[in-house]
Length: 246
Image (cartoon, rainbow, N blue to C red; front, side):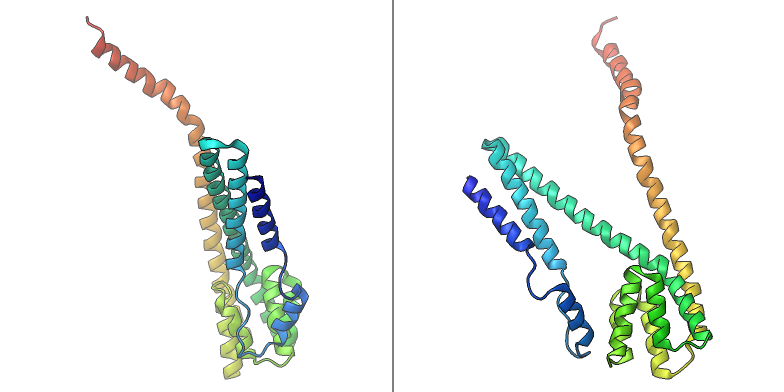
């Protein structure tokens, strides 16, 4: 059994090892790729595979360590817990990224509008705002600016951002302006107002959800006391009335 555990651990480490070109080469390839060429597949499938392997290894180690039927049941439980926990952590990271995008987008759009009103060319304005904002939004804007600087079609470069629902309004606005030649500053100002409204709505929703999550543990703390002080005496009184003769 220890041999199987060792093989499972080796397989997990093999999946964790990087494959293909280095990250720097991947970023350079993404910048110089022709707009008609499809990009690499998203790493979501690989992340799911790694989570399943980690859950399997944890469950197998638990089962071998405990042994017997108890070990098998405990290994199954540990594997399920590890898989669900890792999935929730990945979902939490995606939620944090989306919240950061929603919060930074109005600021970035306002900065873009201010740069355009000051006479800054569109490409330089995008690069300056990307450097200022940073985070996932800054990385996305830097990628678009780099593609345009290397000769990619601006409409195609901006449409790549529309795959993210949070960045789709900015991408569509930039594409319409690049195709029609209209001034971007007034449109960006309206977009900034809309995105600030969206950010306030999202912040209010997160605040309500946080309040609900904060009340749930408090309710669990009071539940045993309620059962012992309210339910148990009532049941005991009813049982004594029914079972004991007068």
